[in-house]
Length: 360
Image 1 (cartoon, rainbow, N blue to C red):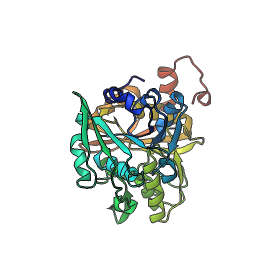
Image 2: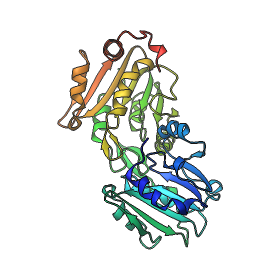
Image 3: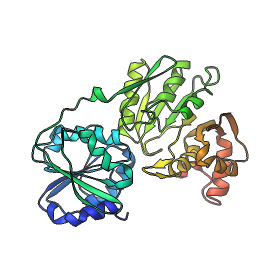
Image 4: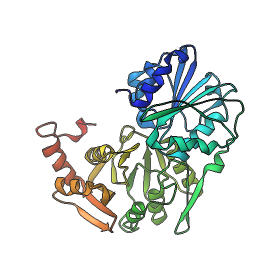
């Protein structure tokens, strides 16, 4: 993977890092952790989908943690934090780190100008003073030498929304944090207790677990697996199931990478962005690979925002599908496994293995 503009700007200070013990964290996008020479370095990630890529490019220590741990971070005297487009998510992650690092630790905050990083530093107000170290046309580097730690309390970051008196907890960066998404609400309006009962269900890209909770409130006889690549999302799912006294199976997974069973129904409100850019990569892989994880007569049910134009793809790809519900912004599609197999085998992988189990 090529270095982005942020990493290239950091390389202007490569000599500074030669004798430093560096921990990389935040929205890491390329192979800078492998390229930048340091005395010792580690990588902290919170999203499971980045793990496979990181493992392929580096032999450095990799820490997969929902929250940074003091016993880990004590071994480093320099933090390079990559800012994401979500200010509250970055504030959550960075404040957690700053609350437990040693004093005199150097903290580099780096990101693209269009991401909102320049206004983000105001989030810390008088707690931490970040000074602009360097900048380019597309990106900027801020630096602070930590003089005092800040307090961090996980409970203060939770936000609760209610849907028909059902409480749903969210953390910054988890889909629906500002408010429960209208697309998700439209999707759950297609759930009925008589039609969705005694089924094995996979909630792909589960976020807060909202979709699964609604299904189980309708009928607790369903067996649900919730899958997400974001560790914060998995944390919220567990908290929400505990809060609503429900049972489920929780999987950290990059799409289907950690899924080994088949289901009667797969549901999703799939993401259509990769950081700041529109991307249908997740959605496309999610649809086509679903045939390997659906039982006979299995069903795929998803909601898509009309403004992203992916509905045209659905109509072009599938001869048969159902529109269960729609409004001016969203469409809920229902696709059965027989239609998925026909398209996948004949159009996507023509004249290849006809046995779906041979491809994963």
